[in-house]
Image 1 (cartoon, one colour):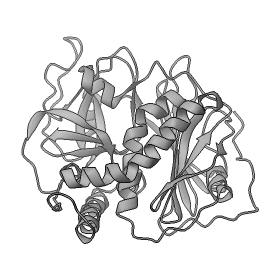
Image 2 (image 1 turned 90 degrees about the vertical axis):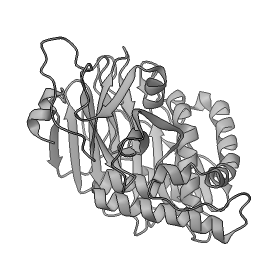
Image 3 (image 1 turned 180 degrees about the horizontal axis):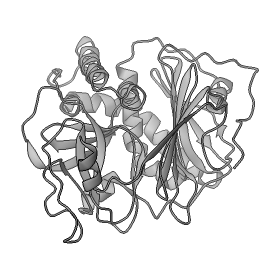
Image 4 (image 1 turned 90 degrees about the horizontal axis):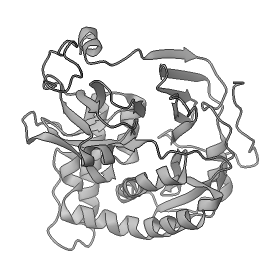
Length: 377
C-alpha cells in the first residue's frame, strides 16, 4: 500500500523508535501476583492479580463495535461513503491481502488486539497488532494478515468477528513477532492439520473434521468447536468464577502453560476488560492445548511468577501515534513483550500486555526472582 493511500485514509502520524533498553515497557508500576493454577488436560492457567487497575469503561472492543454497527470494516478500495466531510480526498486502490480499512463511528475509542479474527470480504484476516483507534475516526488502514490462503473472492461484503475465538498463540505470535505473511500461512496450515489430526486420532463424536485452508472455517466446524469447548469449559468456568471472586483483588490476566511449558501471558488494565476478552482468549489457549502433544508436567507458581516478572530486554521498539496510543515491543533472548498504552486525554495507562515465550522454550531460573525494572518517567 502506498504512502499516498495511507495518508488519504487518515492513518495519522505513527512514529517508530528503536532503542537499546533493559526496562519494563509500560507507563505505570503495577505489582502483578500469580495465584494457584487451574488445570485441565495439558492446559494450565495461572490467574494474575494486581495492585493497580484503571477505568476502561470508556473503550470499545472490536466485537462490540461491529455488532452495534458503529465500527465498519471494508476492503481497501471500497471506502466510498466512509470519509467524513465533503472536502476530504477519496482513497484509491484495490483490495489487498494485508490491508483492510476501518472506520470507528463510535464516540468511544476502539481497542484492537492482535489475534482477533475478522471474517468476510475476499479473505479472512487476523489483526496484526494491538492498537487504539480514536473515537469518530476517519478511515484508517487496519494492519492484518490473511488466515485463509487460496481464496480471493467475496463471500460477503459485510465483515464480522469470530465472537468466540481469536487466533491461538502459535498463530497469533507469527503475526505479532514474525510479522510475515508466509509464516502466518504456515502456522495456519500447521494448526488446521494438528487440530484435525488430534481429533481424528481420538474418539470423535459426530462427523470427523476435515482440515481446510481457512483457519476460521476449520475451527468453526461442529466437531472442532465442541472439542475446544470441552477443553476450555473447566478452565473457563473456574476462572470466570475466580474473576468475580477476586474482583476486589483486581484479577486482570493470566499466565498460560501448555504441555508443561510456559508459553504466554495476557494482562489487562481492568478486570472488566479482561472479562470482555476472556471467552475468546480461553478458547485460543484450549486450541493450543489440543494441537500440542507435549505430555503435561506440573508448572509451579514460582516459575509462572518469574516468567511474568522477567522484564529485562536487549532491545525495545516503540511505535506511537501521538495523543492516541503507544505500543512497545521488548525483545529478550527468550521472550517478547508487547505493551499497548493509551495516550488519550485522561488515560496514560497500559491497556494490554502480551508476553510471549520464545518457541525454543522458556527456561525459568527459580531463585533469581526480582521486581521488574522500569525506565524513569
